[in-house]
Length: 337
Image 1 (cartoon, rainbow, N blue to C red):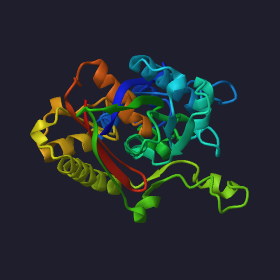
Image 2: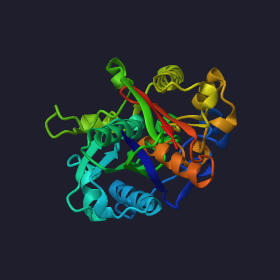
Image 3: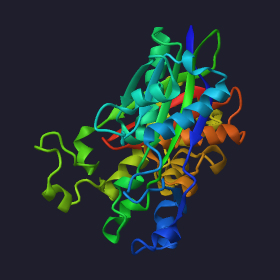
Image 4: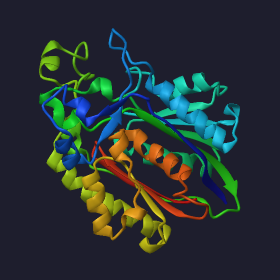
């Protein structure tokens, strides 16, 4: 039976560190205020030139993370059959970022697709890669999560509730077909609840409006992220726990057998609440939000790559990836490493 096994991981983050103290020069905030509400102490933002253009694109960051993952997997770019690129911030309105990565890495006309599931994008992408491999459609799939968030934030006091949370970065995983192994993706669960779509969204540009963006929309700040924070927190703490329980049940695994949970790095308060509810100690829940902030689709692959590099994930370990985000969408993957 074909199994989808992660054979290499990698990540890339900009070298420009933006601390909470740095943000106090842009808005009325403080390190204590940000840490108390989110657990974030710093994040990475791409540098910009005099015209406000970033030093790299999301596709370029994704390609950098992918190169690291391919190197660790010992896979040549030409052996990749399919790219799955998860992002809420594509370089262009269309096409998606996957095709840019195909070109940047010289993947020799490999298939490419984007997933627009925001914070849950990597979880959905890994489930899709598992499906491609089990169906025999692909033997080697590159799953990438990458985001340029910093250019889309209202970095003033008016936007501080959201602006302090987000960072730029990219992570990637090489997923390959293997026969006769108990390793790989054991189970996935995916869910959505669209009635809450506008409680965490960016309205502009809007396809139903002539010109896509109007002066009135800009004046109203509709091109900035909007978040109903209390509602998101309430649903996230519930759905994270539900997704973990569901994927463990689907895989026939007891919570005590899990070596590590890698949650989407949304908010340390959410992570702590979910861990306490499920009885997981801090040694079982990976967290790097203090250093990178919320990198949406990139957060799980960045955390996974770091956990592997740190020796927190070893061969045979049972690992859960879990996310909740805009849509609302949520889901989880259960892996045997």
